[in-house]
Amino acid sequence: KYDLKDFSVEAGKTVEIVFENPDFMQHNLVIAQIGSLQTIGKAADKLAQAPDGADKNYVPEIPEVLFATRLVNPQQAVTLRFTAPSKTGDYPYVCTFPGHWSIMNGVMKVVQAKSK
Image 1 (spheres, rainbow, N blue to C red):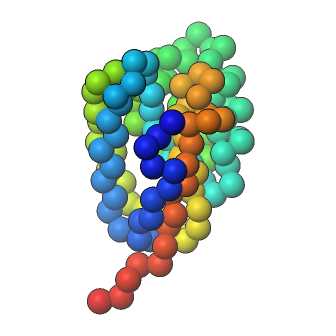
Image 2: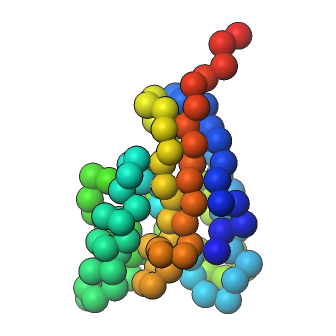
Image 3: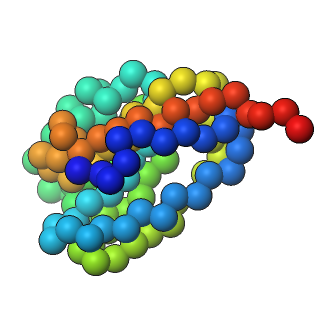
């Protein structure tokens, strides 16, 4: 499981996530469109059977995927930088390594940017 079940970011702002993998197996971080956890998970399950699934880091090539890291090896880290969506709401994040998505997920809450 991820150490955070949810976190908040401001709409339209630059986000930087340092994703560290302290586990003994590979994991990734995929941020998806609102309401698309099941869609991403099912697509990831299909990739597990595909000959090129590992080459694609088990990240489905579908429009619901907004941002994704590569597979991160045990005891390694990767930084994911992106601009948060402009639409506020709850965006699921998930590990799409085979079999992980149903328990290894959380929510990125996109909130209205604070005015200065």
